Image (tube, protein in one colour):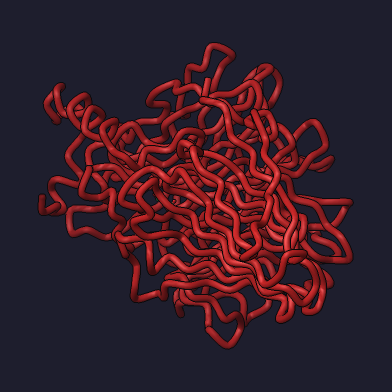
Length: 491
Ligand code: FRU
C-alpha cells in the first residue's frame, strides 16, 4: 500500500470500523510477535509517553498510528501494570481531535498532582499550506483513567529565535514549582533545550535555553528527559544530525546521555557536564523516557525502532515495540542501565551451560523468549548464535574478552533491513578482563546488558521462525560459564 499524505492524516472516525480489527487479526498471525514487550495491536508504535506511577499503578502511554506501519496521525495509547512486566491495554487515551492537535497528539510526559495525573504533550498542527505549528497542551487524567484536555494550550508557540520544531515537554517538579524541558530548534538550525517554569501548571514562562555543549546539539533536539541519580542530573535526549566528530554513532539518529554535576533549572544552567554518550550501543533505541519514580528508582523505557527506517513487519502492517523498563544508576560518573528487578519474575527453569570437548554447547527447546547469562573469562572469546529450530540463519553475538568487545551481527538473520546503517554494532568495554552478558531474547527483539549494565545493546532481528535454540562456541573448555533461563508466558 502506498501511503500518501491524505491517508496518513485521515481523521480516525473516517476509517471504516472494520479496519482496525482486520489489521489486528493480521498482526496476531505474525511469527515476529513478541511475548513480553509492549507492541501495537496494529499499525505503528513509537515514543513512550507519560510514564508514571499514579493511583497505585504504573502508567505508560505510547505514540500510536494504528492504521498502518507509517508515521501518520498520532495518538496516545495507554497501558497499565502492577509489576512493570505485565502490561494491560487500556485503549486510546489521547486522540488528535482538537484544533491544537489536529495533526498529531505528539510526545509528552505526566506527573501525579493531588489525586489526578497532569499530562503535558505537544499538539502538532499543519496549516492549509502545510506549515508546522506546535502547541504545548495540558490534560488531566482522573483515577478512573478519563482524560480531559484543557481548552487552551499552555504554550502557543516557541519564543522568538526558535522554529516550530518545538516539542516533547518533560515535566519536572521541584521544591520551587513545576518545570518543563522542551526540545527545540533555533532559526539558524541548531538543536536546543528550552526550560519553562510554572507555579500553578497553568501559566508557563520561558527561563531560557540550557547550555548544552554546542557540539552536542545537532540541528534539532527531540525527546529531552531529566532525572536525578544520587543528586546528579542525567539528561537524556535525541540530537538529530549530531556530528560524527562528537560521537561515532551508526544509527540514523542517536539517543544520548549527558551526566552533569548540577542543573539549575531557574537559570537553565548545567554545570560540570561530562562527555556525551550513546545511551545504547545497539541498532534501534530512540526516544527514551526516564522518570524519578516514587520508590526512589530512576526508571527508563525506550522506543525500539527508529524514524525513517523500514522494518520487515511493515509488510504485516505493524511496527516496533518498547523496551523493558530499565533502572538507571551511576557508578564513578558512568551511567549504568539494567532491566528492573521485576523482570526476573519472567524466569522459570534454568539450565547450566556445559561445554562439550569441542568447547561448544547447544541449548534447545527454548520457545521464543528466554535469557542467557554468560561470563567469558579474561582473554577468552565466545560466539553465541540465536537460531530457529532449523538453524536457518542466526543473530550472532561475539564476546571477545581479550579486546574487551561485544559485537552483535544481524547480517545472517535472513530478513535484512536498515542495511545502510551497518549490520553490526560493537560495544567496547575493558580489555583483558572477564566480560559478563545478560542476553534477553523475546522472539524478534534482543536486549543485551553487558558488564552489569555498563553498556546496553538493543535491537530487532527477524529470523525465518521463532528462536528456539542457542549455539555457543568458546575458545577453550574454561572460557565460559553461565546459564539459560526459560521465561514464563505473559499474564
Ligand atoms: C520522536 C518524535 C517526537 C515527536 C513524536 C511524534 O520519535 O519525532 O519528537 O513528538 O516522535 O510521533
